[in-house]
Amino acid sequence: MNDKKETTSCIWIIDDDQSIRWVLEKALKKANFKTKTFDSASVALTRLKRQNGEQPDTIITDVRMPGIDGFEFMNQVHNFDADMPIIIMTAYSDLDTTVQAYQEGAFEYLSKPFDIQEATSLVKRAVQKRFETSPKSSGKDISSEIIGESPAMQEIFRVIGRLSRSNISVLLNGESGTGKERVAQALHKHSPRADKPFIAINTAAVPSELLESELFGHEKGAFTGAQSQHKGRFEQANTGTLFLDEIGDMPMALQTRLLRVLAEGEFFRVGGITSIKADVRIIAATHQNLKELVSQGRFREDLYHRLNVIKVHLPAIRERREDIPLLLNHFMQQSAIELNENTKTLNKEVLDYLCTLPWSGNVRQIENTCRWFSVMATGNIIQMSDLPDELKSNSSGSTEPTTSSNEVEPQHSDWTSQLQQWTLNQLNAGQQDILSQALPMFEKTLLECALNKTGGRKIEAAKLLGWGRNTLTRKLKELYSNP
Image 1 (cartoon, rainbow, N blue to C red):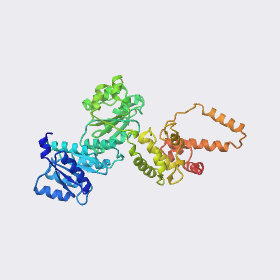
Image 2: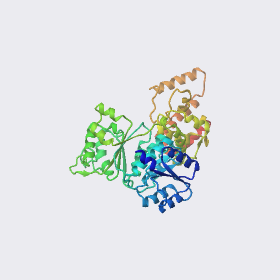
Image 3: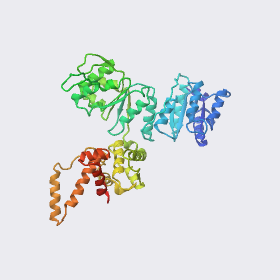
Image 4: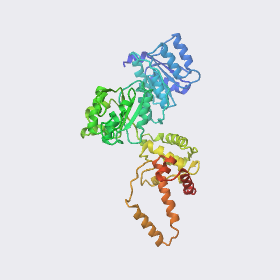
């Protein structure tokens, strides 16, 4: 943008906080913009409608203010000036607010506290945009469970907002447990297809010989066991969104067929002769480096480019540590409701300690740890003594927490030989009544593994152990009455 535009452009700043108005006014004047400030949206709206005095080229407005809020103000402005760039700013940096800002026509979203250089840069872009055509959008208010106030998560919110009017393909990349499916669901819920089906399939979890049928369906008699017609995920997701998780594990032969479907918009069921139309938005996800897989000849380059229209990286917990307290609080409340338990809280020592852990399992590990606390902790306030051994061991830096993992690497393959050695040691030491020691340890180990496997769901855990629900409840009381 040339200097002439900067020196002649007028920026309106609307915020009931005088300090915010002062900081922005000072920064924008230093960047050679003219400014006008208002402490309420209603006063600014009246001035704008009267057309008296210099009109703005861009408006910066807070969301939450007495009287007319930022969204209502923006809607009213766009009723008579659809191309006015409006930058929405707020201290309430959640996904709903971010998406709503974009869907209702905001030029950009600025979360408080903001960087002055970033704010100035946004204004420069907005002023330039003022001389272009900017379509007005309508808004939806849809809830989401994506939690985070970190800069990394704010960028994810922005991407979802920017894509809220699009049907474009998206590739999600991130470590296991970072919430790729939740982001995929949010992209769907905040899209023009929100009222259409959202169908998900983990391509790594389905045996390769069954994956083709799962994706494209099959006709009766297409293969042994095909006793009736089956509609595949593409057909189920028609007019909606299909989420292909762990796309990097898809067999090469199916990659070829998937590419053909994406290119032609139609497919055949296995054993079928009738072409079926497929109007499906694809959101794919992987924890792998697809570009590297392409170079290794394990993933089709043309399919990679077809899927990689918009790429979104989901940050690991170590990249957004400031979100750990928010996630812990959210999942403690959620798990209490889900498991029909009292809501438990973490004392400060526990919270501070948990914030230092590596959380290699990312959001999923935090969620499952909160489920563990909800079921296993005896009091309503979680103490350090309530932490499972896997988490406590991190105080010495020896191991990473594995509470949320459903797979445990055994240190010894023959556990009976360990039990035999322990028994001999106890007997040689003159111990008696050793069954009263061993049996609770044995039951406690099985119980913890079963609850961990089911995410804390007691009825399912009881079935895995071959117990009734009442037996499991009684065992919990017996084994953890003296933690």
